Image 1 (cartoon, rainbow, N blue to C red):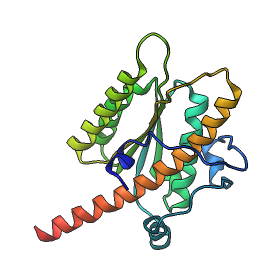
Image 2: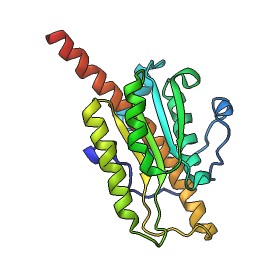
Image 3: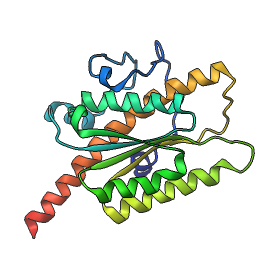
Length: 210
């Protein structure tokens, strides 16, 4: 998988699905399965599920509140997938809400500096509001997240999406984005677990060599 896959999950199309998932409160997610027809697990992803029934990683989720009704779809599916992968989501996954995507880099850094988290996953939807070019905002957010990740050596993964066309009054388009965001949440969870495992392995190897 490409470097860009892990740090900026911004591309790809949602495959056809039987139904779209309506997000439910986090305390109910562990009792409900997300019935999706999604892509099969890769070999590495199957290893994660087989070799790690219980994972002790701690993950912070950051959700921008612009278009919250859509962003929450991604956070909910991510939360559910982290539980499937073996994380104790009740105790080791925490959600932080911020006004918009521009606040994500700062809050990411504050969360990491506070300690106790192995990764941060950020969620947002940056759309063209007609006042300024939304691509500039998206690039600023991504650059900030990348800087935080490299400075702190803690993975900061992005599920901040920037659609080329977005019409909140188009019901067909909104349904497509709901489906797409379910997929993005699942992919973000899998990428986070894989990245945390690799980072832990590298740190353990370095400690052993020292």
